[in-house]
Image 1 (cartoon, rainbow, N blue to C red):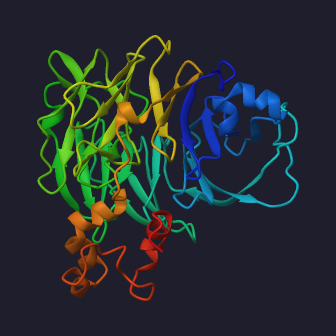
Image 2 (tube, rainbow, N blue to C red):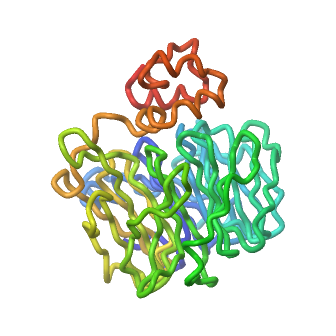
Length: 402
């Protein structure tokens, strides 16, 4: 489907409740779409409803990345104009953005924060799991940490020596990962903002500098993350890095002929047998292909070829875990739907609970709740509302534990 009107699409994201799709690109605009209508053209025609909900023109340059907050209340956008905008859906009548020829907006999205601090374009940003912080990275070699309530710049992370093109928060909210053209990934401790480690080995044999972004991602249980733009002869790969040891997993996600530039884990875990669960991940490449992997299998379950004419630049999963959307520099979006027989049955343990069960001591230490670790199997779902840190409340609510 063509959602870019012939212009490159640089980013897309799906609202946490699955109702909306946001896209952005070289035309300086952000567009909000009704996801059901995008995925089903016949339904759009039958219901006589517009699939385009809003066109937003709040930037003075190409919009490189867009991300909904985990709560779904906000949308963060970042641009070559060096500015980050945080928007909120408001009530009241919407108006068309200046220069918008597509008619009045249906939804009323308003800028509530404007964040200025970078001195160059911003290729990636990411919300913390509790939505209290926003991390952004830039071609000024910096990672900036922002307070999402006040808009205050809290921390400047300056250990990279070249363009920083990707950031991703650990779902347990203990670490932040950033990837740069200096051929390294840095893991930052969010309690001190000191580097925990510099990961360089996966990039020692080959690295492509001519990439738009380097979008990395953590598994939903926090046990590993995928970095990108690694070359392991004879092909380009996405290495999997194990939490704690920070060493590359033996399983490289292989098979691409050009640099892998985006990796996005499925938000769900899937049963690989009666008791164990496994992660699923999609990766996209400059070879205009994407592959989808269930990590207990040695081969991808899907290889997407001939869908795009140019690089895949961003990926997003629907909340149920069974549909993937991919955007390309050619201005198109492709949707890939999977069945339970292909991915597996969604695991009974929620991803966050699995993450906190695995790493609960580190998490409880962060919030001064060490005494709870010995009392409960899962720190999140067994906390009372009085004991539970506010930052974890939305996880339990979304998992149905409250």
